[in-house]
Image 1 (cartoon, one colour):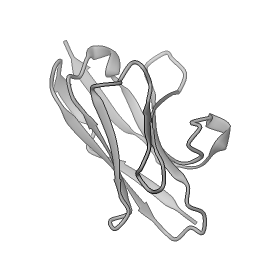
Image 2 (cartoon, helix red, strand yellow):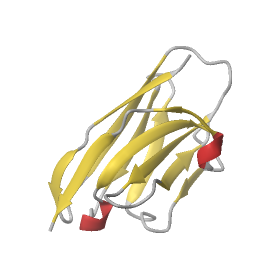
Image 3 (cartoon, rainbow, N blue to C red):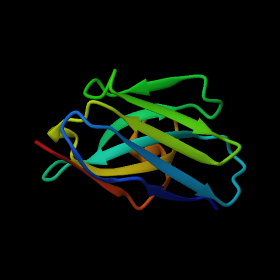
Length: 121
């Protein structure tokens, strides 16, 4: 089945930008949405952004709206998260997932291993 691998994390200063990538391998029969989640130190995993299979619809958490952009390139089997105007509170391990557009944790069917994003002040 599908496996997901994130990349692009690293250290960046406040106000900087970073682009995360999530590459999917293997074939899947279902046309699921792709989503990004994050887990900050001492906090639970939270929803960040979602994009439908077709790429026609996107949705963002209020905390990142206007700063982050999710997109997908189905020809490359890759989903991206462009992060601009980064803040220290964005520091977290970021995970991509394949599942339902609702963003419910229980409706995610495949998870990546995560990539660390650290924003310094």
